[in-house]
Length: 203
Image (cartoon, rainbow, N blue to C red; front, side):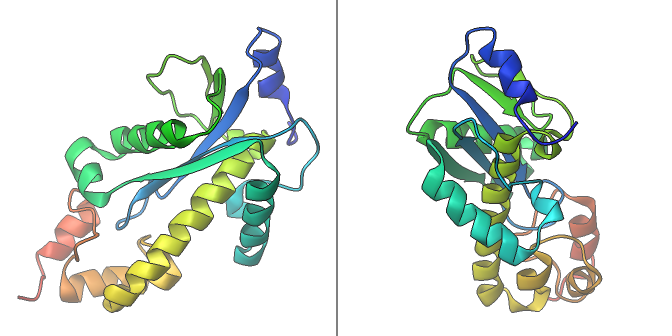
């Protein structure tokens, strides 16, 4: 299946006129927030695709285009502390609900990338929706670019962990820093590699 409107059409045909795409970024990271985005686009053809297949420059350019030309968009986060408190799945759902609450237009249905949310609206949640839906791809781009910028800012405070490059993922340099310095304030303390890093924390 190519990028298009297949999932949205299924919902439109059932009478749900305002359908939004939803995606997240940062679920697998060891540090930083999980970020969710919601996007509503006009039915058209777009260059947007799964953010993981784009360069940083392409993502930034497309994010600007999405914000300018979408009917509505919103981005929200759940913090590392909330991830530790609730678990990563529940924190991801929390970030999505916060993004929906910020949206200027409330959608009547959603297409998500395998996120089965407990909300009133009907949801289609196929795996890899960001590779098949323009709206979910657009949401993936907004979530990724927003989260990357957040991690770049945190890199200035926690300079040992190379957050500007790894964005909180478990790169070799990041894991080495954890072993040397232990976790910082934005690490997810409930994640196993971070727990292991704490064994070597420098006091």
